[in-house]
Length: 476
Image (cartoon, rainbow, N blue to C red):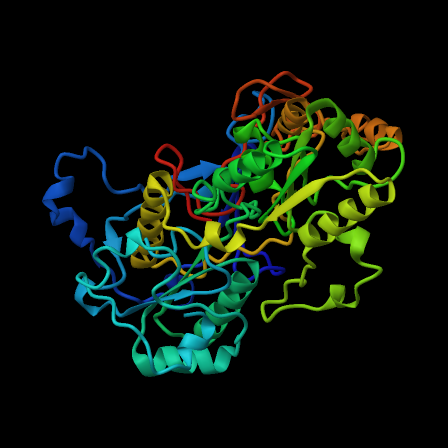
Protein backbone atom coordinates (compact mmCIF):
# COMPACT_ATOMS: atom_id res chain seq x y z
CA UNK A 1 0.00 0.00 0.00
CA UNK A 2 1.49 3.35 -1.00
CA UNK A 3 1.22 6.40 1.16
CA UNK A 4 -0.05 9.20 -1.08
CA UNK A 5 1.54 11.76 1.22
CA UNK A 6 5.03 10.45 0.50
CA UNK A 7 5.70 8.94 -2.92
CA UNK A 8 9.01 7.58 -1.69
CA UNK A 9 7.53 5.47 1.07
CA UNK A 10 5.47 2.33 0.56
CA UNK A 11 3.62 1.19 3.66
CA UNK A 12 2.89 -2.52 3.88
CA UNK A 13 0.85 -3.79 6.81
CA UNK A 14 0.74 -7.27 8.29
CA UNK A 15 -0.69 -9.19 11.23
CA UNK A 16 0.04 -8.18 14.80
CA UNK A 17 0.48 -4.51 14.03
CA UNK A 18 3.35 -5.16 11.58
CA UNK A 19 4.20 -2.18 9.39
CA UNK A 20 6.89 -2.20 6.69
CA UNK A 21 8.11 1.22 5.58
CA UNK A 22 9.36 0.03 2.22
CA UNK A 23 11.39 1.92 -0.37
CA UNK A 24 10.88 2.22 -4.13
CA UNK A 25 12.09 -0.47 -6.51
CA UNK A 26 12.64 -0.39 -10.25
CA UNK A 27 9.83 -2.91 -10.74
CA UNK A 28 7.37 -0.38 -9.28
CA UNK A 29 7.50 1.55 -12.56
CA UNK A 30 9.42 -0.84 -14.83
CA UNK A 31 7.69 -4.19 -14.19
CA UNK A 32 9.34 -6.02 -17.11
CA UNK A 33 12.89 -5.10 -16.20
CA UNK A 34 15.16 -8.19 -16.39
CA UNK A 35 17.32 -9.33 -13.46
CA UNK A 36 20.59 -11.26 -13.34
CA UNK A 37 22.35 -13.62 -10.94
CA UNK A 38 24.40 -11.65 -8.43
CA UNK A 39 28.08 -11.95 -9.43
CA UNK A 40 29.07 -12.11 -5.76
CA UNK A 41 27.95 -15.73 -5.73
CA UNK A 42 31.15 -16.56 -7.60
CA UNK A 43 33.39 -14.56 -5.29
CA UNK A 44 35.70 -16.98 -3.43
CA UNK A 45 35.94 -14.62 -0.47
CA UNK A 46 32.36 -15.45 0.46
CA UNK A 47 32.43 -19.17 -0.28
CA UNK A 48 32.67 -20.05 3.42
CA UNK A 49 29.71 -17.88 4.42
CA UNK A 50 26.66 -20.01 5.15
CA UNK A 51 24.07 -17.44 4.16
CA UNK A 52 25.64 -14.50 2.43
CA UNK A 53 22.61 -13.28 0.51
CA UNK A 54 19.82 -11.51 2.33
CA UNK A 55 16.41 -13.12 2.11
CA UNK A 56 13.98 -10.97 0.16
CA UNK A 57 11.56 -10.92 3.09
CA UNK A 58 14.12 -10.03 5.78
CA UNK A 59 13.24 -6.88 7.69
CA UNK A 60 14.58 -5.14 10.75
CA UNK A 61 12.39 -3.66 13.47
CA UNK A 62 12.66 0.03 14.26
CA UNK A 63 12.30 -0.56 17.99
CA UNK A 64 14.42 -3.40 19.29
CA UNK A 65 12.43 -3.98 22.46
CA UNK A 66 8.66 -4.42 22.42
CA UNK A 67 6.16 -5.48 25.05
CA UNK A 68 4.85 -9.01 24.67
CA UNK A 69 1.28 -7.71 24.29
CA UNK A 70 2.19 -4.74 22.11
CA UNK A 71 2.10 -4.39 18.31
CA UNK A 72 5.06 -5.58 16.24
CA UNK A 73 5.66 -2.05 15.06
CA UNK A 74 7.55 -0.44 12.17
CA UNK A 75 10.08 -2.43 10.15
CA UNK A 76 12.55 -1.68 7.36
CA UNK A 77 14.15 -3.75 4.66
CA UNK A 78 17.41 -5.30 5.69
CA UNK A 79 20.50 -4.14 3.80
CA UNK A 80 22.81 -6.54 2.07
CA UNK A 81 23.33 -8.36 -1.23
CA UNK A 82 20.37 -10.03 -2.94
CA UNK A 83 20.56 -13.14 -5.11
CA UNK A 84 19.23 -11.20 -8.11
CA UNK A 85 20.73 -7.99 -9.44
CA UNK A 86 19.23 -5.48 -11.86
CA UNK A 87 22.57 -4.34 -13.29
CA UNK A 88 25.30 -6.23 -15.08
CA UNK A 89 28.53 -5.37 -13.28
CA UNK A 90 30.37 -4.27 -16.41
CA UNK A 91 27.48 -2.02 -17.41
CA UNK A 92 27.40 0.01 -14.20
CA UNK A 93 28.30 3.66 -14.72
CA UNK A 94 28.05 5.21 -11.26
CA UNK A 95 28.61 8.72 -10.00
CA UNK A 96 29.25 9.94 -6.46
CA UNK A 97 28.30 13.42 -5.29
CA UNK A 98 29.43 15.01 -2.02
CA UNK A 99 27.55 18.08 -0.82
CA UNK A 100 27.69 20.48 2.10
CA UNK A 101 30.36 20.82 4.77
CA UNK A 102 33.37 18.57 5.17
CA UNK A 103 33.23 15.55 7.45
CA UNK A 104 35.78 12.85 8.33
CA UNK A 105 35.04 9.76 6.23
CA UNK A 106 33.90 11.43 2.99
CA UNK A 107 36.71 9.74 1.10
CA UNK A 108 36.03 6.15 2.31
CA UNK A 109 31.76 18.01 -5.89
CA UNK A 110 28.24 18.98 -4.82
CA UNK A 111 25.25 19.25 -7.18
CA UNK A 112 27.15 21.79 -9.23
CA UNK A 113 29.37 18.91 -10.28
CA UNK A 114 26.57 17.73 -12.56
CA UNK A 115 27.05 20.88 -14.63
CA UNK A 116 30.83 20.95 -14.47
CA UNK A 117 33.16 19.44 -17.03
CA UNK A 118 35.92 18.72 -14.54
CA UNK A 119 34.57 15.41 -13.31
CA UNK A 120 36.97 12.90 -11.79
CA UNK A 121 37.21 9.32 -13.02
CA UNK A 122 37.51 6.99 -10.02
CA UNK A 123 39.81 4.08 -10.79
CA UNK A 124 41.06 1.52 -8.24
CA UNK A 125 44.51 3.12 -8.41
CA UNK A 126 43.13 6.63 -7.89
CA UNK A 127 41.08 5.73 -4.81
CA UNK A 128 43.66 3.36 -3.33
CA UNK A 129 44.59 5.53 -0.34
CA UNK A 130 42.00 8.31 -0.26
CA UNK A 131 40.61 7.00 3.02
CA UNK A 132 43.80 8.28 4.64
CA UNK A 133 43.01 11.85 3.64
CA UNK A 134 40.65 14.39 5.09
CA UNK A 135 38.15 16.49 3.14
CA UNK A 136 36.77 15.21 -0.15
CA UNK A 137 38.77 14.54 -3.30
CA UNK A 138 35.63 15.23 -5.34
CA UNK A 139 35.12 18.75 -4.05
CA UNK A 140 31.90 19.98 -2.49
CA UNK A 141 29.38 22.79 -2.90
CA UNK A 142 26.05 23.97 -1.55
CA UNK A 143 22.85 24.58 -3.44
CA UNK A 144 22.50 24.09 -7.19
CA UNK A 145 19.32 21.97 -7.15
CA UNK A 146 18.06 22.26 -10.74
CA UNK A 147 16.50 18.84 -11.16
CA UNK A 148 15.98 19.11 -14.92
CA UNK A 149 19.59 20.04 -15.64
CA UNK A 150 20.86 17.42 -13.23
CA UNK A 151 18.80 14.60 -14.71
CA UNK A 152 19.68 15.78 -18.21
CA UNK A 153 23.34 15.52 -17.22
CA UNK A 154 22.77 12.03 -15.79
CA UNK A 155 21.23 10.93 -19.08
CA UNK A 156 23.87 12.59 -21.23
CA UNK A 157 26.70 10.97 -19.29
CA UNK A 158 25.07 7.53 -19.36
CA UNK A 159 25.01 7.30 -15.55
CA UNK A 160 22.83 4.55 -14.09
CA UNK A 161 23.71 4.71 -10.39
CA UNK A 162 23.82 7.95 -8.40
CA UNK A 163 25.19 8.06 -4.85
CA UNK A 164 24.49 11.36 -3.10
CA UNK A 165 26.24 12.07 0.20
CA UNK A 166 25.00 14.98 2.28
CA UNK A 167 22.73 16.30 5.01
CA UNK A 168 19.05 17.19 5.12
CA UNK A 169 19.15 19.73 2.29
CA UNK A 170 21.14 17.36 0.11
CA UNK A 171 18.72 14.51 0.75
CA UNK A 172 15.76 16.71 -0.16
CA UNK A 173 17.52 17.45 -3.43
CA UNK A 174 18.18 13.72 -3.95
CA UNK A 175 14.47 12.99 -3.47
CA UNK A 176 13.56 15.54 -6.13
CA UNK A 177 16.12 14.07 -8.52
CA UNK A 178 14.73 10.58 -7.94
CA UNK A 179 11.18 11.72 -8.66
CA UNK A 180 12.27 13.25 -11.98
CA UNK A 181 14.19 10.09 -12.88
CA UNK A 182 11.13 7.98 -12.10
CA UNK A 183 8.92 10.32 -14.11
CA UNK A 184 11.15 9.81 -17.13
CA UNK A 185 11.18 6.04 -16.59
CA UNK A 186 14.98 5.85 -16.44
CA UNK A 187 16.89 2.80 -15.16
CA UNK A 188 18.90 4.90 -12.74
CA UNK A 189 19.23 4.02 -9.05
CA UNK A 190 19.44 6.93 -6.62
CA UNK A 191 20.94 6.25 -3.19
CA UNK A 192 21.05 8.95 -0.54
CA UNK A 193 23.76 8.54 2.10
CA UNK A 194 23.25 10.79 5.15
CA UNK A 195 26.20 12.92 6.27
CA UNK A 196 26.50 15.16 9.30
CA UNK A 197 29.35 15.41 11.74
CA UNK A 198 26.90 16.79 14.33
CA UNK A 199 25.12 13.40 14.64
CA UNK A 200 21.78 15.22 14.36
CA UNK A 201 20.04 12.91 11.85
CA UNK A 202 17.55 10.72 13.72
CA UNK A 203 17.00 8.15 10.96
CA UNK A 204 20.36 6.47 11.48
CA UNK A 205 22.18 4.99 14.45
CA UNK A 206 25.17 7.29 14.17
CA UNK A 207 26.49 9.60 11.49
CA UNK A 208 29.96 8.92 10.13
CA UNK A 209 32.63 11.34 11.26
CA UNK A 210 31.11 11.74 14.72
CA UNK A 211 33.57 9.32 16.33
CA UNK A 212 36.47 11.09 14.63
CA UNK A 213 35.30 14.53 15.75
CA UNK A 214 37.18 14.36 19.01
CA UNK A 215 37.99 17.74 20.42
CA UNK A 216 40.35 16.67 23.17
CA UNK A 217 43.38 18.55 21.85
CA UNK A 218 41.49 21.82 21.88
CA UNK A 219 40.06 21.20 25.34
CA UNK A 220 43.46 20.11 26.66
CA UNK A 221 45.01 23.27 25.24
CA UNK A 222 42.30 25.40 26.84
CA UNK A 223 42.89 23.65 30.17
CA UNK A 224 46.65 24.24 29.99
CA UNK A 225 46.12 27.91 29.16
CA UNK A 226 43.60 28.35 31.98
CA UNK A 227 45.67 26.63 34.67
CA UNK A 228 48.86 28.47 33.75
CA UNK A 229 47.70 31.90 34.89
CA UNK A 230 45.60 33.40 37.66
CA UNK A 231 41.88 33.52 36.89
CA UNK A 232 42.47 31.83 33.58
CA UNK A 233 39.46 30.92 31.42
CA UNK A 234 39.74 28.61 28.44
CA UNK A 235 36.77 28.80 26.05
CA UNK A 236 36.38 26.21 23.28
CA UNK A 237 33.73 26.40 20.56
CA UNK A 238 32.78 23.09 18.96
CA UNK A 239 30.47 22.08 16.13
CA UNK A 240 26.78 21.56 16.78
CA UNK A 241 24.39 23.79 14.86
CA UNK A 242 21.20 22.35 16.33
CA UNK A 243 22.48 19.42 18.40
CA UNK A 244 25.08 19.40 21.14
CA UNK A 245 26.31 15.81 20.91
CA UNK A 246 29.92 16.67 20.05
CA UNK A 247 30.16 19.18 22.91
CA UNK A 248 28.48 16.80 25.36
CA UNK A 249 30.62 13.76 24.57
CA UNK A 250 33.83 15.82 24.41
CA UNK A 251 33.02 17.22 27.84
CA UNK A 252 32.32 13.79 29.30
CA UNK A 253 35.52 12.41 27.80
CA UNK A 254 37.68 15.26 29.04
CA UNK A 255 36.76 15.64 32.72
CA UNK A 256 38.53 19.04 32.61
CA UNK A 257 35.47 21.02 31.52
CA UNK A 258 33.65 23.16 34.07
CA UNK A 259 30.71 24.19 31.89
CA UNK A 260 29.17 22.84 28.67
CA UNK A 261 26.65 24.93 26.74
CA UNK A 262 24.57 23.35 23.97
CA UNK A 263 21.63 24.45 21.78
CA UNK A 264 19.15 22.16 23.53
CA UNK A 265 19.75 23.75 26.94
CA UNK A 266 19.00 27.49 27.05
CA UNK A 267 21.19 29.44 29.43
CA UNK A 268 21.33 32.97 30.75
CA UNK A 269 24.19 35.20 31.77
CA UNK A 270 23.08 37.45 34.60
CA UNK A 271 21.31 36.87 37.88
CA UNK A 272 21.06 34.04 40.35
CA UNK A 273 22.19 30.76 38.81
CA UNK A 274 23.44 32.46 35.64
CA UNK A 275 26.70 31.86 33.81
CA UNK A 276 28.40 34.94 35.27
CA UNK A 277 27.67 33.85 38.84
CA UNK A 278 28.85 30.30 38.17
CA UNK A 279 32.03 31.55 36.49
CA UNK A 280 32.87 33.73 39.49
CA UNK A 281 32.29 30.79 41.80
CA UNK A 282 34.58 28.45 39.86
CA UNK A 283 37.34 31.05 39.66
CA UNK A 284 37.19 31.60 43.41
CA UNK A 285 37.27 27.86 44.09
CA UNK A 286 39.80 26.68 41.49
CA UNK A 287 41.48 29.78 40.11
CA UNK A 288 40.68 28.70 36.55
CA UNK A 289 37.80 27.48 34.36
CA UNK A 290 37.20 25.67 31.05
CA UNK A 291 34.02 26.34 29.07
CA UNK A 292 32.87 24.32 26.03
CA UNK A 293 30.15 25.82 23.86
CA UNK A 294 28.44 24.38 20.78
CA UNK A 295 28.16 26.74 17.81
CA UNK A 296 24.36 26.77 17.96
CA UNK A 297 24.09 27.51 21.68
CA UNK A 298 22.94 30.91 22.94
CA UNK A 299 21.88 32.20 19.54
CA UNK A 300 18.74 33.67 21.09
CA UNK A 301 20.86 35.82 23.40
CA UNK A 302 22.58 37.64 20.54
CA UNK A 303 19.80 37.63 17.94
CA UNK A 304 18.41 41.04 18.92
CA UNK A 305 21.67 42.94 18.48
CA UNK A 306 22.80 41.28 15.25
CA UNK A 307 20.75 41.65 12.06
CA UNK A 308 21.96 38.65 10.05
CA UNK A 309 20.20 35.98 12.11
CA UNK A 310 17.62 35.38 9.38
CA UNK A 311 20.13 34.89 6.60
CA UNK A 312 20.69 31.44 5.10
CA UNK A 313 23.43 29.70 3.18
CA UNK A 314 22.95 28.07 -0.24
CA UNK A 315 21.66 24.87 1.40
CA UNK A 316 18.98 26.71 3.36
CA UNK A 317 20.76 26.49 6.72
CA UNK A 318 20.47 29.48 9.01
CA UNK A 319 23.72 31.43 9.23
CA UNK A 320 24.84 31.42 12.84
CA UNK A 321 26.76 34.14 14.61
CA UNK A 322 30.05 33.31 16.31
CA UNK A 323 28.66 32.69 19.77
CA UNK A 324 32.12 31.84 21.08
CA UNK A 325 33.56 35.21 20.16
CA UNK A 326 30.44 36.98 21.41
CA UNK A 327 30.37 35.27 24.80
CA UNK A 328 34.12 35.85 25.19
CA UNK A 329 33.53 39.60 24.92
CA UNK A 330 30.57 39.47 27.28
CA UNK A 331 32.52 37.59 29.97
CA UNK A 332 35.43 40.03 29.67
CA UNK A 333 33.06 43.01 29.92
CA UNK A 334 31.36 41.56 33.00
CA UNK A 335 34.56 41.01 34.95
CA UNK A 336 35.99 44.35 33.83
CA UNK A 337 32.96 46.11 35.34
CA UNK A 338 33.54 44.24 38.59
CA UNK A 339 37.25 45.08 38.42
CA UNK A 340 38.18 41.40 38.61
CA UNK A 341 41.17 40.61 36.38
CA UNK A 342 40.77 37.52 34.17
CA UNK A 343 42.73 35.99 31.31
CA UNK A 344 40.46 34.42 28.70
CA UNK A 345 41.71 32.40 25.74
CA UNK A 346 39.22 31.55 22.96
CA UNK A 347 39.90 28.45 20.82
CA UNK A 348 37.88 27.54 17.72
CA UNK A 349 39.08 24.19 16.29
CA UNK A 350 36.07 23.71 13.98
CA UNK A 351 37.85 23.40 10.65
CA UNK A 352 40.71 21.41 12.13
CA UNK A 353 38.28 18.80 13.47
CA UNK A 354 36.14 18.33 10.39
CA UNK A 355 39.01 18.25 7.88
CA UNK A 356 41.05 15.43 9.46
CA UNK A 357 41.06 11.83 8.18
CA UNK A 358 38.61 9.45 9.83
CA UNK A 359 39.66 7.07 12.58
CA UNK A 360 39.37 3.28 12.43
CA UNK A 361 35.81 2.97 13.71
CA UNK A 362 34.53 5.56 11.23
CA UNK A 363 36.47 3.87 8.42
CA UNK A 364 34.78 0.54 9.16
CA UNK A 365 31.39 2.21 9.47
CA UNK A 366 31.82 4.04 6.16
CA UNK A 367 32.82 0.78 4.46
CA UNK A 368 29.68 -0.96 5.69
CA UNK A 369 27.53 2.02 4.74
CA UNK A 370 29.03 2.20 1.24
CA UNK A 371 28.64 -1.52 0.63
CA UNK A 372 25.02 -1.45 1.82
CA UNK A 373 24.19 1.48 -0.47
CA UNK A 374 25.83 -0.19 -3.48
CA UNK A 375 24.17 -3.54 -2.77
CA UNK A 376 20.79 -1.84 -2.47
CA UNK A 377 21.25 -0.12 -5.82
CA UNK A 378 22.41 -3.32 -7.51
CA UNK A 379 19.30 -5.06 -6.17
CA UNK A 380 17.08 -2.51 -7.89
CA UNK A 381 16.18 -0.40 -4.89
CA UNK A 382 16.19 3.31 -5.55
CA UNK A 383 15.10 6.57 -3.97
CA UNK A 384 16.20 5.55 -0.49
CA UNK A 385 16.69 9.17 0.48
CA UNK A 386 14.50 9.26 3.53
CA UNK A 387 13.78 12.81 4.63
CA UNK A 388 12.71 13.82 8.10
CA UNK A 389 11.94 17.20 9.58
CA UNK A 390 12.83 15.92 13.04
CA UNK A 391 16.42 16.25 14.17
CA UNK A 392 18.32 14.11 16.62
CA UNK A 393 18.89 16.22 19.72
CA UNK A 394 20.36 15.89 23.18
CA UNK A 395 17.54 15.32 25.65
CA UNK A 396 18.39 17.46 28.66
CA UNK A 397 15.98 15.51 30.88
CA UNK A 398 17.87 12.33 30.03
CA UNK A 399 20.40 10.61 32.24
CA UNK A 400 23.30 11.25 29.88
CA UNK A 401 22.90 15.00 30.33
CA UNK A 402 22.61 14.42 34.08
CA UNK A 403 25.97 12.65 33.93
CA UNK A 404 27.44 15.74 32.33
CA UNK A 405 25.97 18.07 34.94
CA UNK A 406 27.39 15.80 37.62
CA UNK A 407 30.81 15.87 35.94
CA UNK A 408 31.02 19.64 35.49
CA UNK A 409 29.00 20.68 38.56
CA UNK A 410 27.45 23.39 36.41
CA UNK A 411 23.89 24.61 37.02
CA UNK A 412 21.21 23.18 34.74
CA UNK A 413 20.11 26.73 33.80
CA UNK A 414 16.55 25.40 33.98
CA UNK A 415 13.99 27.22 36.07
CA UNK A 416 11.85 25.16 38.48
CA UNK A 417 8.85 25.35 36.15
CA UNK A 418 10.81 23.72 33.30
CA UNK A 419 11.97 20.90 35.58
CA UNK A 420 8.45 20.29 36.89
CA UNK A 421 7.01 20.20 33.38
CA UNK A 422 9.64 17.74 32.17
CA UNK A 423 8.83 15.38 35.02
CA UNK A 424 5.12 15.49 34.12
CA UNK A 425 5.71 14.12 30.63
CA UNK A 426 3.57 11.07 30.08
CA UNK A 427 5.15 7.67 29.56
CA UNK A 428 4.30 6.00 26.23
CA UNK A 429 1.01 4.14 26.38
CA UNK A 430 2.05 1.68 23.68
CA UNK A 431 4.17 -1.37 24.24
CA UNK A 432 6.57 -0.12 21.57
CA UNK A 433 9.19 1.83 23.42
CA UNK A 434 10.75 5.17 22.70
CA UNK A 435 13.77 5.76 20.49
CA UNK A 436 16.39 6.14 23.20
CA UNK A 437 15.62 9.74 24.03
CA UNK A 438 14.57 8.65 27.53
CA UNK A 439 12.72 11.85 28.46
CA UNK A 440 13.47 11.47 32.14
CA UNK A 441 13.24 7.70 32.44
CA UNK A 442 15.86 5.52 34.02
CA UNK A 443 18.88 4.44 32.00
CA UNK A 444 20.25 0.95 32.54
CA UNK A 445 23.44 0.78 30.43
CA UNK A 446 26.32 3.03 29.57
CA UNK A 447 24.93 3.37 26.05
CA UNK A 448 21.77 4.75 27.61
CA UNK A 449 18.89 2.56 26.58
CA UNK A 450 16.20 3.65 28.97
CA UNK A 451 13.52 2.14 31.11
CA UNK A 452 9.91 2.94 30.38
CA UNK A 453 7.01 2.83 32.78
CA UNK A 454 6.61 -0.91 32.25
CA UNK A 455 10.24 -1.56 33.17
CA UNK A 456 11.45 -2.54 29.70
CA UNK A 457 14.48 -0.78 28.15
CA UNK A 458 14.08 1.68 25.31
CA UNK A 459 16.31 1.26 22.30
CA UNK A 460 16.19 2.68 18.79
CA UNK A 461 18.39 1.67 15.94
CA UNK A 462 17.35 2.35 12.37
CA UNK A 463 14.63 4.92 13.11
CA UNK A 464 13.67 4.90 9.47
CA UNK A 465 17.08 5.24 7.90
CA UNK A 466 19.99 3.11 6.81
CA UNK A 467 21.60 1.09 9.55
CA UNK A 468 24.72 -0.85 8.77
CA UNK A 469 25.69 -2.37 12.09
CA UNK A 470 26.80 -5.98 11.85
CA UNK A 471 23.85 -7.26 13.86
CA UNK A 472 21.19 -4.96 12.57
CA UNK A 473 21.60 -3.75 8.98
CA UNK A 474 18.57 -2.35 7.24
CA UNK A 475 17.62 -0.09 4.37
CA UNK A 476 14.79 2.35 4.70
